[in-house]
Length: 247
Image 1 (tube, rainbow, N blue to C red):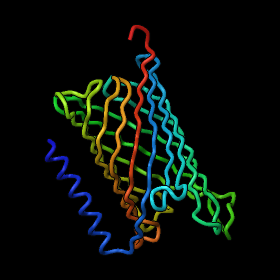
Image 2: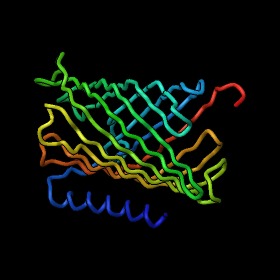
Image 3: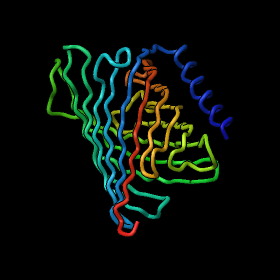
């Protein structure tokens, strides 16, 4: 299984490097920090919250994006969950010529898990409706650009001690997420971006873990022939809380 993960990571990074060599591509160095929380209230209901703080320019020189996301969770079972919610994002300008751009983002998602001896697999499929303020003559207008975005993510967790990820277990973590744009305002960049991550993690308790590692983001810009290749340090913390009585 470890060999399969490493092969997938190598193919993803090689594809990004090939496109990098063929297109007009800007290289950026970023740091991504994130906190994810799923709190379960009853057998069927819960709350999703995640917060993101991203820096760019030699990893830490400037702010890039802030995101706050919330959703209601409906538990079909312990392994399958439906979400529907809202996210607010702010895209920070780099310089004084343009303002910071806010974005409103309703979203819906199905998430499912498969736990086996030797690995855990998590997948989700997410649909986003992106309302992003437009900029004219260096000023924010009252209008919004709108597009749909479809996201598929899979994450593989491999324990480095024992057969399962339990408290006090180090693990190897790999995930890949592809983003596809849709909508009448999308002309050249139906492919939005791909995010490939490989890192090490630690399961502190049954409800809390974190992982740190390298992420490559390869993104196509609206112009169509321009791309961004991001080399990022990523630290994510995952916190699950179960408030059901008797648990």
